[in-house]
Length: 138
Image 1 (cartoon, helix red, strand yellow):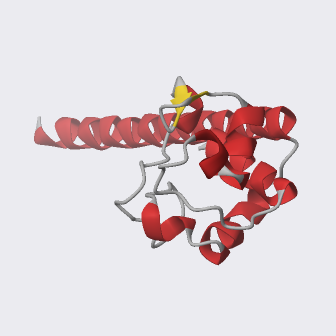
Image 2: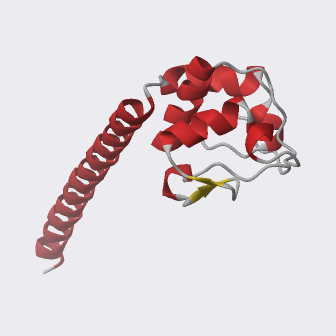
């Protein structure tokens, strides 16, 4: 009786492991596809290149004030966390969330909210589009 149970148990364990591995591959593929779709949509929306954003976040000090997903060391608490920005209704509570408004805010936040803590950094519109593409894709 024991000889019959052990092989059955091993077959079941192997089958369960194979199913789990297959599901893991499907989930990983779906996540990658979702990320690619979100990134492509963000690029089309903003005209920016999200691959250039990590260096820009560091160069302009964004990571010192904001928590930014996927950017090591970007854990600032002065400004709002920037995760899920594409789902927000407003930018900084003052502008309707659109790609044009986000780029304009990044370039010159003081024009929209003179008392904001966010400084005018000297960032160009081109660079702001790259940051917007990154933020909308994460």
